[in-house]
Image (cartoon, rainbow, N blue to C red):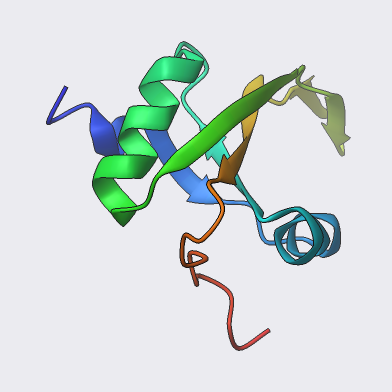
Amino acid sequence: MENRVYQIIRRPIITEKGLGVKETQHTVVFEVAKDATKTEIKEAVQRVFKVKVDHVRTAIFHGKFRRRGRAEGFRSDWKKAYVRLKEGEKMIEYAENI
């Protein structure tokens, strides 16, 4: 699990909706590995950021069909995790200067 922690959490999702959820619901949003379970995501966030996690919600996004000139194909599928922190926990700061 120690090596897999950084493979589970790919990157934070820094969008207007993601930052709004962060402010109103004490929730952070990450792109995670497609095969990661909610329990693995919870443990990974707790280890990396040293916070207590209340619960995790996930959503799978299917790749869209895209064309660029004559080349065409599909984007890859990906998974998003909404991680809610417990009350009293300090919020993870990854987007302060936006």
